Amino acid sequence: MRAEDPSTGKHAGCVVDLTGLGHVTLVQEVARNPETCLYRTDHTGVAVKVFDLECGRDDEVSYGPYANFQAELATFEEIEAIEALRVFVPRYFGAQIDYDRKFAFIAMEYLPGSNLRAWAGETAAEGYGPRQLHGLSRVVRDTLAILDRFHQHGFVVIDFKPDNVVRLPDGSVRFVDLGAFFTPRHRNDPASFVYAATPDHAEVVIDASNLQAQVAPSVTGDVFSAGVALFELATGQSRLLIDPATAEEMLATPALYRFRDTQIADVWKAFPHLRPELPLLQTQLQERRLLFAELWHLLKAYVAARVPGWEDLPEAEHEQILLSTGTTFVMEQLPEPLAWLAGPIARATALRSQRPASVGALLPLLGQPADPAVLADLEAHNHFLAHLRNLEVSTDFATRLNAWDARRNAVSQRWGISTPLAAWQLGGTAGCIFLKRLTEDPAGHTWWTAVDEFEADMLGGVRVNLAGLGADHQSWLA
Image 1 (cartoon, rainbow, N blue to C red):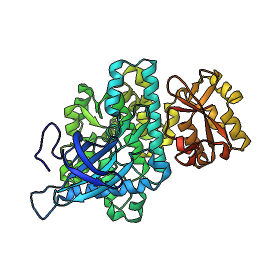
Image 2 (spheres, rainbow, N blue to C red):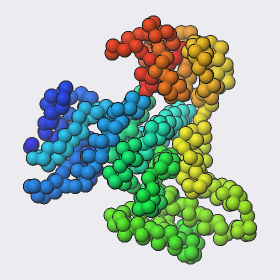
Image 3 (cartoon, one colour):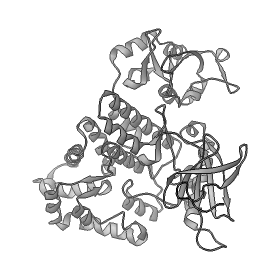
Image 4 (cartoon, rainbow, N blue to C red):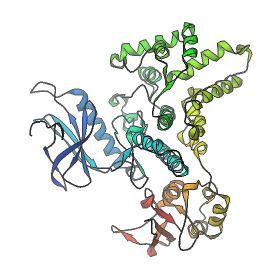
């Protein structure tokens, strides 16, 4: 291993061996955090994530990075075994620990594109015209639908945030950085789970209390993180700004935040390293920036102190007033073209008793319904839907399509349905729907028709089916 070159990274030049690929050389560092770096390699399409195990002793390795490597590797292997999930993460090529050179690595597919935080910033810089809004809406829904798919298979992402989702050039998205996941294996062996989350994106106070009580992480936490992610995509920030006059009014009434601050201080005792990232609510008010995890607790106390006769109102009215107040607070911080995100953000981040039980419940709030004329054309002329009806498979989903779920064929002038959307809606049935390629349009979109199994095209030695095209956003069902 050669000496560190700042232009390429500490481990540039290292050679690792991968089954089926042989010697792979790390060429250029493309991303870094305190314990890991991601490198491009001399093999096209292959990236290597390096975990630095150096601890200053010849006979030891650094435990934190070592544990993170083991956790991420186990999650990769678990996801690889599930066909319905593996298409939503980078392809896995292998992993190893090098005790002599004091590093571990996971080799995976290199994903071209930007993480969602960077991509959303680029979109904002272009201005929110129809094309940008359409693209943002689609990416948001696709990302949350994938998150919901992981939940259906027993995975909780834990540290879900825009930095850990990559948008590819074709518009599809993939999840990366898998080390924090709570997976089915952890349900069978809870002691093997190590909680890792950032206070900006998770409800650390609640999670810490639950873990001490041996309560497993749940989907509810990911719903919260999804709401924060939506806010970050819209504003570039993960914390809420608060009007200085309102902040001073709250600071003048310590009863509004004193109890919550004792809970935060308790978390510091158990996890001292979180102290800089999880400031007291009093400090957040002084800095005029609130963590989403503290917003609703503070608002509830504030509204209860200001609304006459609060204690006499029914609980349902309490919830309505609180949700309305919070939604307005969020909306005031969003760019005007993205004000429609305020409702979903508020519902996702609200107190757990008011929060949707699943990410899937948020999706209807984020749609842009397709034109009725498009839906009518599909109902009358789309061969794929007719094929499903012949198989006695429900086509109700085709009455609820969004604008980006349908595309007009330039030759036939008829509308087609997105293959990822159809595969998502049909679930396990998608593997039994076989397809034959019709044509490719000038924009590079491929059109398919549904056929009987032995009429289907062959690809990689297997018959093409809908499940196999479930991540191809350039494919449409004619």
